Length: 115
Length: 111
Image (cartoon, rainbow over all chains, first blue to last red; front, side):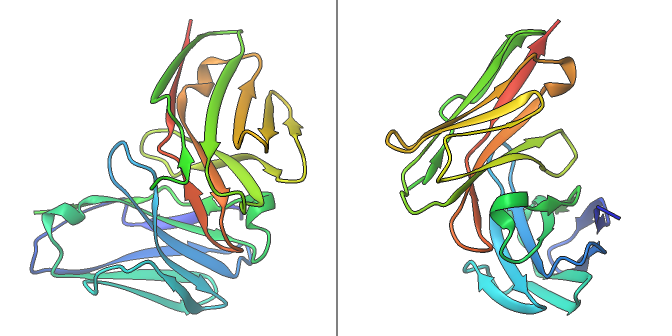
């Protein structure tokens, strides 16, 4: 299995809703990432988990809450989002220390619309 | 301030010809550079990387050149094929885990 699987592919939520994005990989990668991508912009790093521990939080608002329950799963819990949070949310994984050689493996993303 | 810059938002190339995508960077501490390809509604796909100690890396139709003194790298695709039409992101490894992306260049391969 050489894929990163993200669910759901599309999500529409209201500003008072609570929802979660899910990401799964079975490549044995011990680093997992959440990126946010707005239209015609580069992916922007949000969070990095290394060995299931949060290692980087790029000053992301607390309405985004990541969780890494085990080495294969990564969640992003969403609460009280704003319309400007509408974007493509990408999950990625990599081998620790080999990011430069092999890069990240990205999932297809969740297209989030906040109404 | 952008540390990885792709100054051409789009590029059109005839099928069969060479596509050259350019990228500039500002941080001399970057030790790896990567290229990703992205189709609509899909995540970016890793294409090829190059270490800062090398000046060229080749993989099939894809070759990446690095000019450290100019802080410039380029991706060459030869020959260009219709399936190469996509957005190409240049990226640089800042730390063991963190990659910084450029804004991307949309490549159109013309029949």
